[in-house]
Structure formats: structure tokens, C-alpha cells
Amino acid sequence: MKEENSMSIFIGGAWPYANGSLHLGHIAALLPGDILARYYRLKGEDVLYVSGSDCNGTPISIRANAEDISVKEIADRYHADFTDCFSRLGFTYDLYTRTDGDFHHRIVQEVFSKLLANGHIYKKETEQTYCEQDRRFLPDRFVEGGCPYCGSRARGDQCDNCSSILDPLDLIDRTCKLCGDEPTIKETEHFYFKLSGFQKHLETVVASVKSDGRWRANAIGQSERYLREGLHDRAASRDLPNGVSIPLKGYEEKKVYVWIEAVIGYYSASKEWAELNAQDDASFWNENTVSYYVHGKDNIPFHTIIWPAILMGIDKANSVPSRVISNEYLTLEKRKLSTSQNWAVWVPYILDRYHPDSLRYFLTANAPENRDADFSWREFIYSHNSELLGAYGNFVNRTLKFVEKSYDGIIPLAKVNWEIKSSVSQLYISTGRLIENGHFKESLEAIFGFIRQANKYFDEERPWIQVKEDQAACDVTMATSIYIIANLAQLLSPFLPFSSDEVKGMLGLGEFKWKELSISECQLYNVRPLFERIDVAQINEELEQLAKQSNGSNR
Image (cartoon, rainbow, N blue to C red):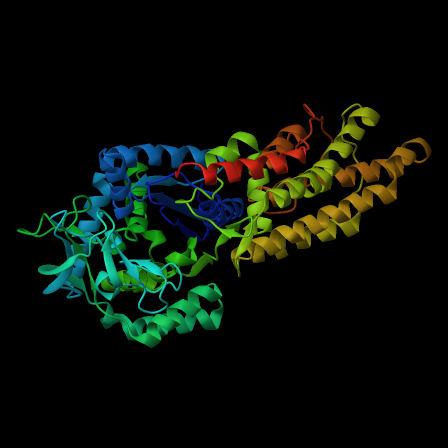
């Protein structure tokens, strides 16, 4: 519920292509969005958190061709898979939608028409790659070749190695992804977005966010590079079999190019949410909105150059991204993730075998916030056993079990240790500030640093002796320890929502909020361990499974 004087917080999570299951790299990039949404809701802010499945992109067409089924069948399969995975991971989207829906198509056409009316889109004759074998103009991702800037193998739209935005005609030694032949070049007519006209405006935006430190360093660095090289007008339409039709008589067979269409998804999802919930989304698109865009570094130019330019072009210059949360890459066992080689940990697989909070913890504590980070089965299992179970779970379990045994499950009334109260009050302020600034790893580290202090406090007070020799002192120790647990559950709820909800149930707590929580005398309920120890023998089992799947057939 919106509170009086609350801020409007818009959070957009990148839209995964509905052409294959999610892997850990996707979750590492997208998880910060849910942490932000949960945190701001605890503060009572007005939050809109949206995303969806990209069902119009060329990767879906490639998968459909490979399986000889329709694009819709592929999109339906993986959209359902994504929805299930995000639900099991605890993602709290206000709307998770898809780009092949009628609502999205209508909004994209409205935005395209406004850009056209405002003079930011124009028609021109141009050259495009054409496959004589397949008798079709080729979507950019259907063309592969050498990157003209770094020499790496690249697609016709972007080089994953150096992040350059490309055109298929830029590639060296071009080949058709469908048949392997070298495509020819034919003339065709297309619509172009006048990106070059926003050069000065975007230079001002990037300089401002750099001065304030509101975007990640990689987002600023890449954006400055594109601006130094000079922005070029880009095709806004393509000859594609699926996607959003150009809203102009005589051009219905052409589709809005996915690079312009997909980012409009944030706006269309906002509008769809508003219509579905009989709400007004205007407060999420003005100068007072704090907007977060959460994605991997391969999506930086689309969120820092393309999307701001589109917003400026439809007279929403005051809605450009406030904060860009652009993670670096996640590697797997010191190797680059590769879906083609099946070198990946697939999300449905890991959720079938491990606690979702274990995954959320590891991907936050080891997040690729400023540089590439590695997922290792050894580190994942040891971090669960030592941090979640050994530090946090152990403190909760031994405290609650002691209250059950020595106090018949009734939490004692006593004055909480003032030093710990002071630490907790400060923790809400410091960790909240870190979350707002996109430093999720540092925020979680601060909370677990306090957990280690809590364990030290418990050990030094020795309540197992106090209960026999000094009941009043024991009451203080246990009241303080329960106070710590209740506040830890609140502080950790953006990061570890499932275990936080378990603590809430065991202590009989009310609705969580982002402020210090006091505990009155109450009864414990259904005390049980938060986490189970993972047998370290599973490390080798998982490594063997990874090698086996990678050496087998491609996914």
C-alpha cells in the first residue's frame, strides 16, 4: 500500500530471451532487482517492479528453426519455465509479462508512431544481408563473422567480447547462421532512428550520472566510449517473420527492430500493470521517480544510450535511468558460461536440489558487481555450510532451542543490551544506504559481520551457566539474542526471504518493515533449523554431473 509522502521507485529487470532455460548467469544479473524491490517495499515506498520474457527476438526464431516447431511453441515453453523459476527463487515482480502479447505490441506501435511524428524516425533505402539459399533477408543475429574492432567471432548486432554495437555489414567474412553460406547484399527500404540527434543530450546525462556516481562504472565507461566514437543513426525496422508490425500503411510486413522494441517493454509493462490493476502509472515516469535498470554488462548500451534516447524522443527526458545496475559476467568453475557447450548450471536443476536462499546468498555475496565472479560448487557448498548454516542458522537455532528448553518457549522480558541496540539501529541505516546505491554484496557482508558479533556475544555471556547462577543476566542475554534474531530476519528479508519468513513464523512477528523491531514477551512456534548441512561429497558429484552434461549432447 502506498504511504503518504512515499517515493515512486521503478525497477526494470532485463528481459531474458525465451529460447532456452535460465542459467546462473541470468540470475546473478537479475537478482539485484528483487533485492531492491523488497527493500523499498519494507521502507513503505511506492514500488513498481516489472520484467518479462523477450519472445520476439531472433534467438527464439533460431531455436524454433532448429526444433522445426513454431516460434510461439518455443516462447510458450520458456516463458512458463521462466515464470516458475522466478517464483521458486522468490522474485516479487509486480508484473512479469511477455513481448508477444497484444498489449506490448500496441504500446510499441504507439511509441514508434510518436517518434515518427516527432521527427526522430525516417525512411531510407539501405543495404541488408540476404541469403540466396534461404531466399530471405537475414535478421542481424542470423549473420555471423569477425568483429571489425576486436576480431572475435560476433553476431550481426553486437560483439559479446568487446560489447561493440554492430551492423551485419560491419562483420568480416560473413556467414548465414542457417545454411553457412556467405550472404549477398541487397537493397531494401527501412526506417531509421535518428540516434545521432541525441548525442549532446546523452553526453549531458552521462556526465551528470558520472558526477553523482549513480551508474555502475562499467555503464559509464561503455557509454562514454560510444559517445566518443559518435552516435550513428540505427535501423528501426527489419524484415522479420515475427515481432511488432510497423504501424504504417504499406509497411505492415516489416517489424520494429528488436533493439528498439525490447527496451520499450519497460514502458509497456508499466502500462499493462496499470490497466490490469486499475492504477495510474504516471508517478513512475516523471522527474521525481527513482528508476533502477538491472541487467548484465552486455545490455549496457541498450539501457544507457538507446533507451534514454527513446525516452527523450517521446518527450520523457526526465525519465532517463536514475541508476544502472549492470553486473559483470559470472563464470563457472573458472570457465566462461557456454550454453552451446552445455557448460552451465541450469536454474531448474539447482532449485530441485538446494535451498533457494542458498543460491540467493551465494550470488549476492559473490556478485560480479565490479569484476567477473566465479561460481564454484566447492565455494557454493562451503559458503552454505559455514555462513548460512554455521553462522546465521546456528545462532538462530541455539538461541531458540535454549528458550524452548530453559524458558518453556516463552521469550523473557528484559532490557536489551544497549550496545547491541545501537549497532542494530546503525545497521538499518548503513545497509539501507548500500542497497540504495547498488552495493548489495557490501550490504550483505555488513549484516553477516554483525551475525558473527552476535555469536561472539552469545558465547561470551554463556547463558547455559547464567541460567544456573544469575537468572536476571540470563534473561537479558536471551532477550537480547531474540531481539537480534528478529531484526536479522528483517534486515535479511530482501536477500533471504524464505528463511526470514520462517523466523517470522517461529517468533510470531508481524509485517516486516525497514526499522528497528522490538520484541515483547511471546511464545515460540514450531522451532526448527533454518538450514540443513550439505554433504561435501556433493561437490564431486556436481562436478562430475557438469562434466558429463558438457561432454554429452548440446542443450
